Amino acid sequence: MHLGNYLGAVKNWVNMQEYPDTERYYCVVDLHSLTTNYVSDKDSKDQIESQEQTLKTAANLIACGVDPKKSNLFIQSHVPAHSELSWILMCMTPMSWLNSMIQYKEKRKKEDSTSVALLNYPCLMAADIILYQPSMVPVGDDQRQHLELTKLLIQRINALSGLELRVPDVIKSEHQRVMSLKNASNKMSKSDRSIRSRISLIDDPEMIKEKIRRAKTDSLGSITYDPNRKELYNLLNIYASVKDIPASNLEDYLADDNMFSFKMKLADGLIDKICPIGERYQALLQEEDRLLEILEQGAKGANLKADKTLATIRKGLKMLPRDM
Image (tube, rainbow, N blue to C red; front, side, top):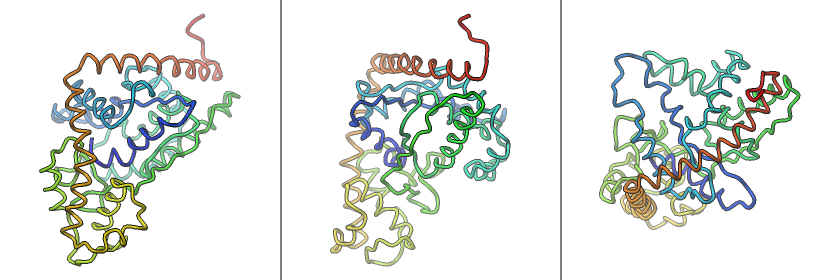
């Protein structure tokens, strides 16, 4: 996981744990991770999501602050209802809806070949949401179109079945999208070939300092919060998020800084925020049995909720019940 994952999503999840009288379900999306891994026989085996990587993602989430005592944390494929509801939703989804998804069109341009799963990805994401009947869903800007599709599918299920499944509200991330340190026209991503384009949640202090020192900026010496200076704008937004400073106050806060001194402040702020996460993560990896127990308990809670919702949908669609 990288800084963009943390600021764009996980930090929000952690904050939501303080909401009173709410249930929370967070999953490690191992099914989603398979989307493009098997599209060609020539694909490298190391592209395939391993058991080890799934556990590492779970450990990262807990290290970031997802508390198993407050939230159900589980592996997506350990709740079979996700796959079944995804198929039902695919049967309700016109091709035109999926072909219009911006992420699909962008990824299709970049790939020599794409899988059916890439096209149907939003249906599985919709199932991930619908099964838990949430009142609120935290999403980043890049997932808003997928959530709109989810709302359309809920309305379609309700129209076909007479059910009244809940249409969730959106909780937008408070933070600007985190962009690449090498090219602020692209979002920070683990798929970028350059490790210097992103801050990993397990980077050590020296690596963080080096990446920020070499992060792309412009030749102007002043610090201004200007979207037209997109590389600096990205770094300033990261700084505001890490230090919990309103972006509107940044220029006053950094009035005496030049580019170098600002970058050093940013690096120090990231080290204070990221390195404790990395330390907790490494400790959790040494307790695999505990990690597996957390995920098993999370899956039990998730299966109870998901199976109940799926049974309601199956009944509404006049499907023969399993427990006859």
